[in-house]
Image (cartoon, rainbow, N blue to C red):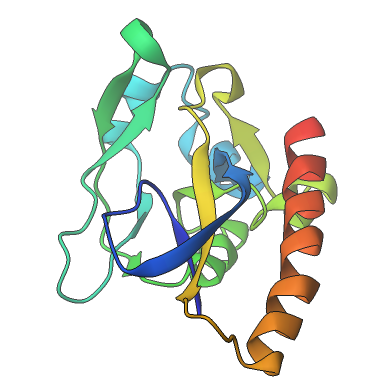
Length: 164
Protein backbone atom coordinates (compact mmCIF):
# COMPACT_ATOMS: atom_id res chain seq x y z
CA UNK A 1 0.00 0.00 0.00
CA UNK A 2 1.10 3.54 -0.68
CA UNK A 3 -0.20 7.08 -0.67
CA UNK A 4 0.79 9.02 -3.78
CA UNK A 5 0.33 12.65 -4.73
CA UNK A 6 -0.28 13.92 -8.24
CA UNK A 7 -1.55 12.45 -11.46
CA UNK A 8 -1.13 8.70 -11.48
CA UNK A 9 0.29 6.74 -14.39
CA UNK A 10 -1.68 3.78 -15.67
CA UNK A 11 -1.02 0.78 -13.48
CA UNK A 12 -2.47 -2.48 -12.28
CA UNK A 13 -2.84 -1.03 -8.79
CA UNK A 14 -6.23 -0.07 -7.38
CA UNK A 15 -6.50 3.64 -6.62
CA UNK A 16 -8.80 5.37 -4.14
CA UNK A 17 -8.95 9.15 -4.20
CA UNK A 18 -8.48 10.43 -0.66
CA UNK A 19 -8.85 14.11 -1.49
CA UNK A 20 -6.62 16.94 -2.59
CA UNK A 21 -3.74 18.82 -1.06
CA UNK A 22 -2.76 22.41 -1.60
CA UNK A 23 0.74 23.79 -1.21
CA UNK A 24 1.85 26.68 0.98
CA UNK A 25 4.99 28.78 0.61
CA UNK A 26 6.20 29.45 4.15
CA UNK A 27 9.01 31.11 6.08
CA UNK A 28 9.72 31.93 9.69
CA UNK A 29 9.20 35.46 10.98
CA UNK A 30 12.94 35.51 11.85
CA UNK A 31 13.96 34.67 8.27
CA UNK A 32 11.64 37.34 6.86
CA UNK A 33 12.95 39.93 9.34
CA UNK A 34 16.56 39.14 8.45
CA UNK A 35 16.14 38.82 4.66
CA UNK A 36 13.00 40.77 3.85
CA UNK A 37 9.55 39.55 2.88
CA UNK A 38 9.16 38.90 -0.84
CA UNK A 39 6.16 40.82 -2.17
CA UNK A 40 5.77 38.69 -5.30
CA UNK A 41 6.86 35.17 -6.28
CA UNK A 42 9.50 36.43 -8.76
CA UNK A 43 11.49 37.71 -5.77
CA UNK A 44 12.02 34.13 -4.55
CA UNK A 45 14.98 33.82 -6.91
CA UNK A 46 16.94 36.14 -4.61
CA UNK A 47 16.03 34.18 -1.46
CA UNK A 48 17.28 30.92 0.02
CA UNK A 49 14.70 28.27 -0.83
CA UNK A 50 14.44 24.89 0.86
CA UNK A 51 13.72 22.40 -1.90
CA UNK A 52 12.20 18.95 -2.15
CA UNK A 53 14.02 16.23 -4.06
CA UNK A 54 14.36 12.47 -4.04
CA UNK A 55 17.39 10.40 -4.87
CA UNK A 56 17.27 9.44 -8.52
CA UNK A 57 14.88 12.27 -9.39
CA UNK A 58 15.65 15.79 -10.51
CA UNK A 59 15.44 18.37 -7.73
CA UNK A 60 12.69 20.91 -8.32
CA UNK A 61 14.24 24.12 -9.55
CA UNK A 62 10.93 25.96 -10.00
CA UNK A 63 7.78 26.33 -7.91
CA UNK A 64 4.33 26.60 -9.53
CA UNK A 65 1.95 29.49 -8.88
CA UNK A 66 -1.48 30.47 -10.15
CA UNK A 67 -4.05 28.47 -12.09
CA UNK A 68 -5.24 28.06 -15.64
CA UNK A 69 -4.07 30.77 -17.98
CA UNK A 70 -2.56 32.61 -15.03
CA UNK A 71 -0.27 29.69 -14.10
CA UNK A 72 3.46 30.33 -14.00
CA UNK A 73 6.62 28.97 -12.42
CA UNK A 74 9.37 30.76 -10.54
CA UNK A 75 12.97 29.56 -10.50
CA UNK A 76 14.21 28.87 -6.97
CA UNK A 77 17.57 27.87 -5.57
CA UNK A 78 19.12 26.94 -2.29
CA UNK A 79 21.56 24.36 -1.01
CA UNK A 80 19.27 22.45 1.34
CA UNK A 81 17.41 19.69 -0.50
CA UNK A 82 15.47 16.95 1.32
CA UNK A 83 13.06 14.16 0.47
CA UNK A 84 11.29 14.74 3.78
CA UNK A 85 8.75 17.58 4.05
CA UNK A 86 9.04 17.59 7.86
CA UNK A 87 12.78 18.28 7.56
CA UNK A 88 12.03 21.18 5.21
CA UNK A 89 9.38 22.54 7.59
CA UNK A 90 11.77 22.31 10.54
CA UNK A 91 14.50 24.08 8.57
CA UNK A 92 12.03 26.83 7.65
CA UNK A 93 10.96 27.16 11.30
CA UNK A 94 14.63 27.65 12.24
CA UNK A 95 15.01 30.49 9.75
CA UNK A 96 17.09 28.64 7.17
CA UNK A 97 14.96 29.68 4.19
CA UNK A 98 11.60 29.62 2.43
CA UNK A 99 9.84 26.30 1.75
CA UNK A 100 6.96 25.14 -0.45
CA UNK A 101 5.09 22.41 1.45
CA UNK A 102 1.85 20.44 1.30
CA UNK A 103 -0.61 22.39 3.49
CA UNK A 104 -0.88 19.64 6.12
CA UNK A 105 2.85 19.83 6.94
CA UNK A 106 3.09 23.45 8.18
CA UNK A 107 -0.53 23.68 9.40
CA UNK A 108 0.28 23.66 13.13
CA UNK A 109 3.38 25.87 12.77
CA UNK A 110 1.29 28.44 10.87
CA UNK A 111 -1.45 28.38 13.52
CA UNK A 112 1.16 28.87 16.26
CA UNK A 113 3.00 31.66 14.42
CA UNK A 114 6.27 29.75 13.95
CA UNK A 115 5.77 30.12 10.19
CA UNK A 116 4.15 32.74 7.98
CA UNK A 117 2.40 31.87 4.71
CA UNK A 118 3.30 33.78 1.54
CA UNK A 119 1.42 34.20 -1.75
CA UNK A 120 -1.75 32.31 -0.73
CA UNK A 121 -3.79 34.02 -3.45
CA UNK A 122 -1.42 32.57 -6.07
CA UNK A 123 -1.58 28.95 -4.91
CA UNK A 124 -1.42 26.37 -7.71
CA UNK A 125 -4.32 23.97 -8.27
CA UNK A 126 -4.73 21.31 -5.57
CA UNK A 127 -2.88 18.03 -6.05
CA UNK A 128 -4.92 14.80 -5.83
CA UNK A 129 -3.87 12.27 -3.17
CA UNK A 130 -4.55 8.58 -3.79
CA UNK A 131 -4.35 5.43 -1.72
CA UNK A 132 -2.88 2.65 -3.89
CA UNK A 133 -2.94 -1.06 -3.30
CA UNK A 134 -2.80 -4.36 -5.15
CA UNK A 135 -6.31 -5.45 -6.10
CA UNK A 136 -7.75 -8.90 -6.48
CA UNK A 137 -10.82 -10.91 -5.69
CA UNK A 138 -9.91 -11.34 -2.05
CA UNK A 139 -8.19 -8.59 -0.15
CA UNK A 140 -6.44 -9.75 3.01
CA UNK A 141 -8.47 -8.65 6.06
CA UNK A 142 -5.62 -6.46 7.34
CA UNK A 143 -5.54 -4.57 4.01
CA UNK A 144 -9.33 -4.08 4.06
CA UNK A 145 -9.12 -2.92 7.72
CA UNK A 146 -6.37 -0.43 6.86
CA UNK A 147 -8.32 0.99 3.91
CA UNK A 148 -11.50 1.25 5.98
CA UNK A 149 -9.58 3.01 8.76
CA UNK A 150 -7.42 5.39 6.71
CA UNK A 151 -9.68 6.50 3.86
CA UNK A 152 -12.42 8.33 5.81
CA UNK A 153 -9.94 9.91 8.23
CA UNK A 154 -7.61 11.19 5.51
CA UNK A 155 -10.51 12.44 3.41
CA UNK A 156 -11.98 14.34 6.39
CA UNK A 157 -8.59 15.79 7.38
CA UNK A 158 -7.89 16.97 3.83
CA UNK A 159 -11.34 18.60 3.60
CA UNK A 160 -10.75 20.36 6.92
CA UNK A 161 -7.40 21.71 5.69
CA UNK A 162 -9.02 22.95 2.47
CA UNK A 163 -11.76 24.72 4.41
CA UNK A 164 -9.58 26.51 6.86
